[in-house]
Image (cartoon, rainbow, N blue to C red; front, side, top):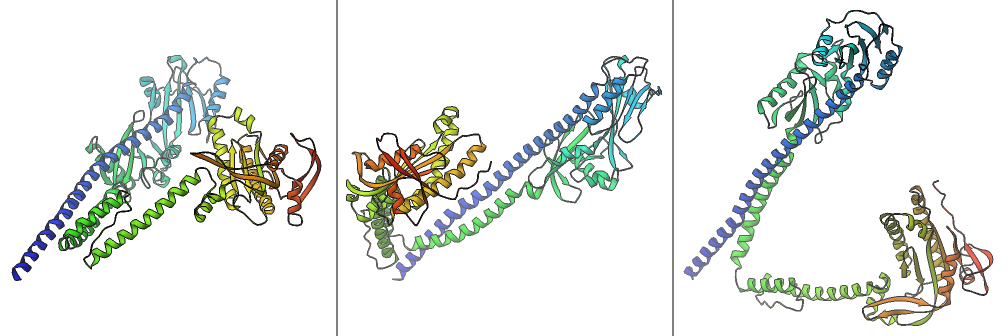
Length: 581
């Protein structure tokens, strides 16, 4: 007995250790590898994202400056004459209106003399003939045709820059523009990286040109403010092609990348806090730790249970589970151990029996729903036979609905527009039809036919039919308001008739429909065809059935298509919703 107990204990320990390690080691290995590869992939993604954002921001700022220089180019097209040129003054004033960033313009002739000065904040001057040929902007423009000055701060706050452009011939002169760079803030503030990442622009000496926080730019050349931005740019330079890490102005660790703005020799820097950039990695690491702890606990419990119960019942349960999972619901698991395994087997057997019944019922309802309304299919399933679908004579209310102008609309509209309208139409009416327990016998394109009181009997079918028609009309009219906004000219008319009809299923072996045959069906169809948009027309039988409960107004005798005699037609009154037009 002692030897057997020791052997059992040794087997338990062996299986426990093997099963425990079999779960924990792969889980730990997978967690570590996922963390490493996740970090590597996230770093690569971050490098790519920040690089693309930096280049994109640089291109947008370069585009901003190019727009200004392109406009300036129009002012240096024609040579100067000795007489004052009023047209140039008009062109310069027009340029100030078109480019809000330009504060003032100075036009010089080929000799470097000032011929025109226009400004937003100062007095305009004309023909002063002041020699400006020695100005830095003039010499720079003559040497390179396009010259960008250093960024300077007006009253040590707002950044300004001088741009000078020379014409393609010396005789056309030079234009010098003072540009307020505060407007670049609109470009920079629109750049977002993640939730809190942003971009900023530094000039060559490392002064802020633009930043989402305009107050930092307005501090001008304050060294304490600029130091973190310069250090971050230097860190990016040392990192080369890779994304650099550093600290922003608030002391938050960030990942950053940069791109040049070639013309003025600026640098666009995009940054994102490391806590956000590597947030998915940190979350994955915590999930890995949690999974390791949960996996270790689960592995220990699983190893204990499996090691203590690895006997024949396990194989029986495994085999039985596979068969039931494969759909063999008639299979039964026979275990008589008097413990949890036996109860588990009994539960499996009970579940298999219930699944067999449920599957049979679902298959039956699915077959019925292929050609019957949902409530009819449920009725057949509850009664256990489909005798209710056999042909019989009964009194029904037949309802027809049809979209007005749909044929013309479908001829003009694209297939996608037509299908979109029909989808909205049937989606809206489907819930109403089910709500009133009506049977949808057929729908063709934009028209549909409903039955009330067959095959499901209902109380006061005429009253139910009138309420159903009103709710359908209101629902479709609401859709029509939206369709009209899209330019679709569509209406909706309905017809109701009550009387005896032969109802039942009709079709062939693999396809049946439930329908009604009789003059009441034809009458309802003709009333629907005669109804205009928003109208619900009913026959006298319906009107008499709902008298005193709903308002139906007589419209007089009317001859309907297909009939020799005239019929007394009623109009169903309802509170129409106003058009949104």
